[in-house]
Length: 117
Image (tube, rainbow, N blue to C red; front, side):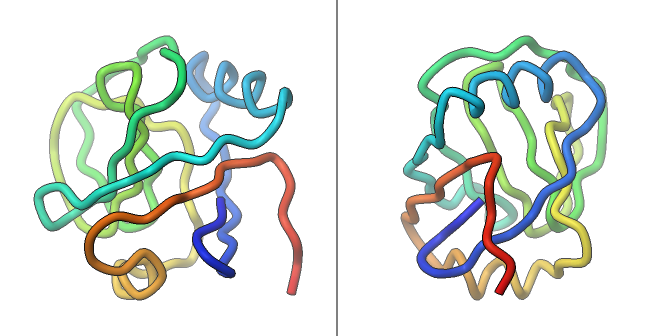
């Protein structure tokens, strides 16, 4: 996923939701307009619904979550709810994510390709 000129690699979960997202991204990248919610995440609408595999989880920085089957969220802090985990950005802190995404709205592009700097 890319915001501005910063790209993060994420490891996909092994569930039908993540697999469906991968299949959609094989068709090409998507850009999601995301906004702050609850001082712990960025959230934005997907252009399509994905299957849900909700379970009660506590998020941590770097979790990429499906909410209500049609919204994608990137967490930079903790929250507990019934969610579907799609992926995890490894080795990233909440502070690093906040620095990249900033306050307010941000466009994030999700793709299956990334560039190593």
